[in-house]
Length: 303
Image 1 (tube, one colour):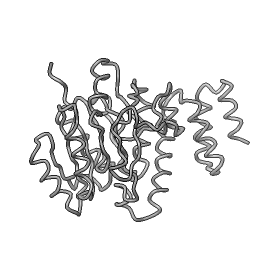
Image 2 (cartoon, helix red, strand yellow):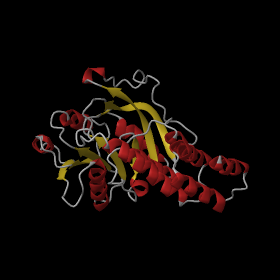
Image 3 (cartoon, helix red, strand yellow):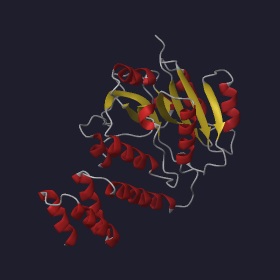
Image 4 (cartoon, one colour):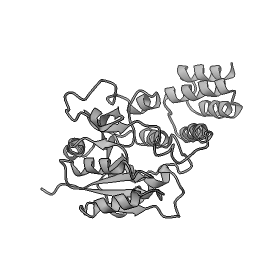
């Protein structure tokens, strides 16, 4: 049996001092049929030199400097990787970050359910945070501290309500599901949240939680985005834009979940946003507003 290839999309920026630890964790995967496309957002340190020296030893790794046709930022770097994966007819896609650590069995344990069930769109694993490598415990039985929740009947709702722990390195995607989407390149923060909400609300994808700690998320003050943007206003501006994007996306759809309408309506009332209130009222009026919950929301919008 020929095993399918997993395409790892590893975005990087100025990580010469950390990326080798990440690459070593990928090399140590028990599932060996993978390719790792390292997309560099034009690092100004020795990242390119460090990576190129490493990948000379392993043809499964490739280094790609992001062309000037893409804007700066993590969203565009991930999109560059997605475009590369599409050109290569990827079957499965795994996003990863340049300072995190894969458990040796991450790819193996997450691809098996996808191979067994063709109706699954992705698998989702748990993770833990770490500061130094000596904190990492690869023992699957002992690593779970109960802080990471990934099993929900309605993942979209749980994710929107910040109950589900889902970020880019967690899911292993079937390429046919993920390859039609791209990150919003105008978002410099909250781009993952907007990206995954859009997919979850559009696709209502089938997923299987793999309840093991299969990657370790490095928590430090120099995250890939914080190193790029020194303006303190960029983060709140990006978060506001993300909410606006989701609101506009939501209002173009039918049968938007009650919790979404309620959340945005409460926010619009709190922020005294007449524009958002009007958009939400119009949406409620042109849908089946005779339902009790929607009537209540409509009345609330005028209070």
